[in-house]
Image 1 (cartoon, rainbow over the protein chains, first blue to last red):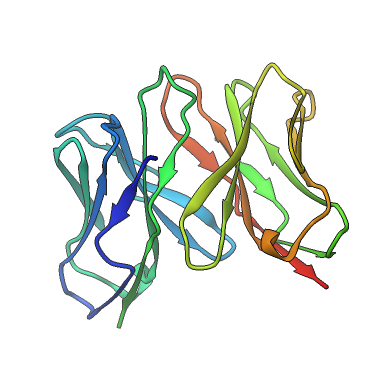
Image 2 (image 1 turned 60 degrees about the vertical axis):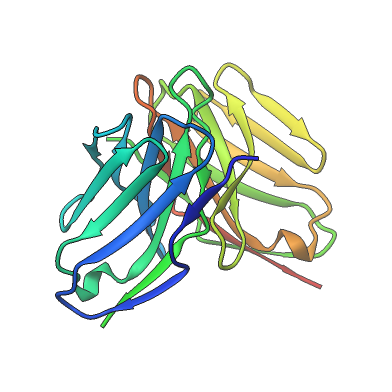
Amino acid sequence: DVKVTQSSRYLVKRTGEKVFLECVQDMDHENMFWYRQDPGLGLRLIYFSYDVKMKEKGDIPEGYSVSREKKERFSLILESASTNQTSMYLCASSLDSASSYEQYFGPGTRLTVT
Amino acid sequence: GEDVEQSLFLSVREGDSSVINCTYTDSSSTYLYWYKQEPGAGLQLLTYIFSNMDMKQDQRLTVLLNKKDKHLSLRIADTQTGDSAIYFCAESIRSTDKLIFGTGTRLQVFP
């Protein structure tokens, strides 16, 4: 079974702190994604990566950055957390475009910024 | 741009059928998906349909695709309390590996 793990289930940070959210997948997938989920808005793509050291902006990249130094690990960074970044963050991975594009999700990190 | 729309809530009685609807805008989508999210968990793939199909059945689940109207539906037969969750439809975007997700439909099953 594909397994996608996220470093924390719940996180509470203060405004202005630098926040790291870590995601690891164990199936040698090329693609990795970071989404945020907010009620009534569904999932919105923040950043994604097709390969090591490669990243592409999604629909809402402002206030976030990412790092992919190893194929299995994709990190989301909030340089200076703000209250409007309080949300559920979901990481996902998928095989390359030769597959059915199915994405496998981690359990999510609920981040609260106070 | 791409947009996927769903109604936000659906409430059904246990044992009845549930139908969750979705409309999408990208006519070049290759695959369309249904994901389920249980409380406090990530998303799990329930089923998907290739764009050249109009129906797919998998046990209690039936997916119908109307490409002309860009309409996708998920029917759950004999709905159980364990089916209570948020259901997301998603479309693949041709020439990328991205998926576009809908807002999610919260299904509540009552006895």
